[in-house]
Length: 591
Image 1: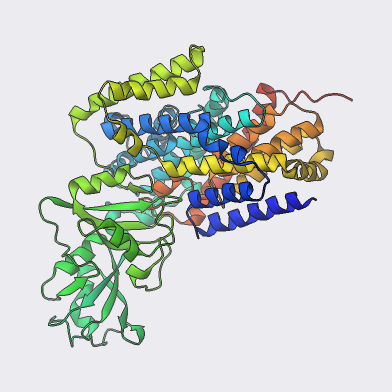
Image 2 (image 1 turned 135 degrees about the horizontal axis):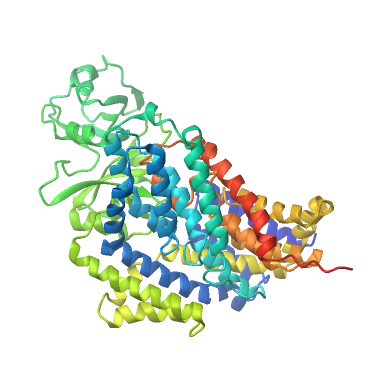
């Protein structure tokens, strides 16, 4: 092991720790890696920054614009709503139908967009069937990832891996190169979840609810202001039980004390409460209590304001910051009333809590500002607003542009990246949206992550780290044959997707896959296909954006994803191990 290899491995470990603990935003980690590689001379500045100006970045940005345009137009939402007619009163048939729709739709738009569009539909279907949506939401999200793996544009992982391959000396993937594999995985996964879903998924009977939003526990902090009638009252006298709200603790000068029923409240006490969002809003509006919410404005929404729930996505710029800091940046017009964090049982002053991936915020503000949040890549409305019918015409234009780009790219008339860019620019010139709108639809955080991690992948190759890791993998598994090495790469990729994003894991291990193939004298393409699809088909932890979108509405726990996701991941890996050598022969050279 050389000093360069040791340094690259240390950088990798540090990056994994930072990504897993969310101490820094993911794009900041990617930029730090790139800057460090250039500053230490491992990569020249030109090589280090080449990933940010790659063809992949342009393609991914164009796919983001077209997918976002389809979502905002309401066309996909209208199609999804019409799909409710295909549901029945039989849970298994309904689940299979929803998964089939999810897999098909995600092959055209991104899996995250598909899940976001279908979530309101699933909630309505579950309400109508008087079942908890946990029975359907996770399978729908899984199916979106399976269907998205079938095409180059269905998931950012496939597109990112394809783009970095040219920098590593291989031809990029075709638009439909994974279509057969994605089809087989989708059919097998839907069948597995349909047959064994009642045992793998959370028991809907134990979570029966007609309105999950009413049962989701939020935490909020209220202040006992000067002149409040609550001063001198015991906690039990506030009547919180009538609202279904629990007092967790009382914060006062000198520390925090338990919210004992007989505890007398004092002026400027901070009362930490937990209950449904609607109940906490009622508490804030109760003049008999006169408890001021942690935000200065009253919670009663005027006619032009609405209440909504938003979830923090992986890598959001808010991660690690306090809720009060986020409130300051939001401004006074858009107010954060309360916070829900899965598994959070200890009392905490909400404004001082450090934000984490998956936190759900109860917000209040003007309708246009709330709806604008859905265009922020760091936040997602749990119930996205449905645009009016006139905007659905814009969705038709976006579909035409997307299909035209796919046709031009697959037929060889134009490179796929050029076809995508021309399709987006055609919509701009046609007046469908402005350049400013286009830039607002792009998740720059994802582009920075992919640009930085692709440079790190190149560094692993030129420093010899990829070859060193490949030699270690071959040393452990080489005696069991090339299929065992192929399987080892898949397992290693899946393990790496747990602390980092799926795309980042694939970009990190692609150089290792190529080095493994060269050392055993095989064609590198099946090995890079294994890494790419293993990253796209990792269902174990809810940190993929598509899974995170259903984490809150389904009231899932981490073990729920492990219980259902592990069998689906093992099944997908088994299918890949069988089909990849058939479609992409290993072609091992004989001595």
